[in-house]
Length: 269
Image 1 (cartoon, rainbow, N blue to C red):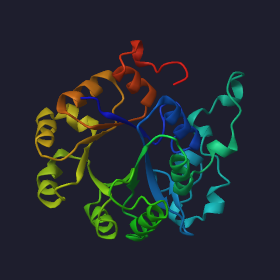
Image 2: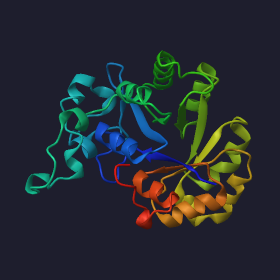
Image 3: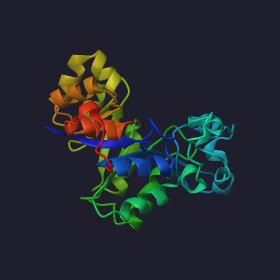
Image 4: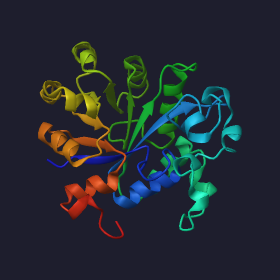
């Protein structure tokens, strides 16, 4: 079985995560889908960012929830990935249009304009000071694209069971993925989650607890795994019948699945 390949925060192994450049690279590689984390700014914009503050990715101590989009838009979200770029004569000049903060709206607009179906896996981050407002704003935005119903290319993921329940009430047709960060949580979650919900275990847990992976595979829930970056991890996922792998290295995994030497993507792919 060939799993779908979803780019984790874009092609984030080689590009700064959550930047438009990272997502364009993933699309060029032929990724089946794009994964992003979303947080709400102080003035109500959903932006693609993982951490609650911007120290790691934009060298700013500010918390996303306390800053307005205009403030965040002034920051550089790409330099941290290659801090020695100024000393590299062959490094490409940074493009502010693809290296700054990325709003969810802009990402969805890019996906909507594509001439092929590309899925979008959107993770809402919790806890947050805005609580359920994050899911409310997200569903409203999906509705603007007509993606708040069955058949939508968008799905919503979260480690928060409560957050996914909110989405289910607001948009019953949208696919939901219950992310799992520890195997011990599965017995309880199995009894609580919806019959048609997907489950998202971490790759490290599947590697360390082989019986856990087999239990998930027999559960009747479609399994999406994060983060799959090596040939060995991909083989384990295939053995378990995993339907989607979320990876920092979409070009590499697609190359492996296509049987190309070294797992490299074809020229121009």
